Image 1 (cartoon, rainbow, N blue to C red):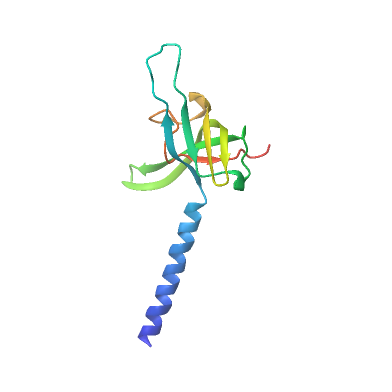
Image 2: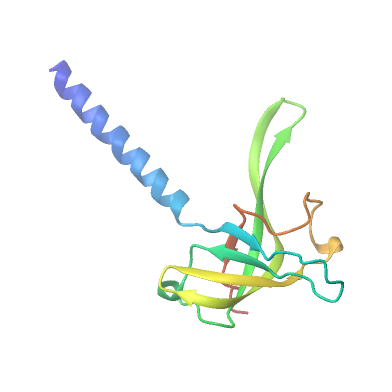
Length: 136
C-alpha cells in the first residue's frame, strides 16, 4: 500500500508543479533588448528595440501600445524575511513589428518620477512584464 501512497503523492506534486509553471508563464515579458550601434554622430541617437514574447496571437498589431511593469521583491526588515513581490508600471512602449508570438517595440515614454517608485536602472530591461492597457 505504501507504493500507492508514493505514486499518488508524486502525481499530485507533479500537477502542482505544472500548474505553478503555467501561472508563471502567463506573464508576457521583455526577453531581449537591442540597441543600434552608435557611430558617433552627434545628430543621431541609436534606437533601442525591446523584444517581447507577445504577438498577433495575443491581439497585438503595429502601433499597439503596451504597458511595462517592474516586479520587485520586497524585504521586511523587522522579520528579516522576503515579504512579497510588488508589481508597478514604469513605462509605455509602442509596437513597431509583429509576428504570431513575438513583437518588437520602442520606448514611447517613461512614467514620471512622481508616479513610480524609485528604480535602478530607470529604463526598460529584460524581465520586465508587458501587458495591453486595460480598457477605461
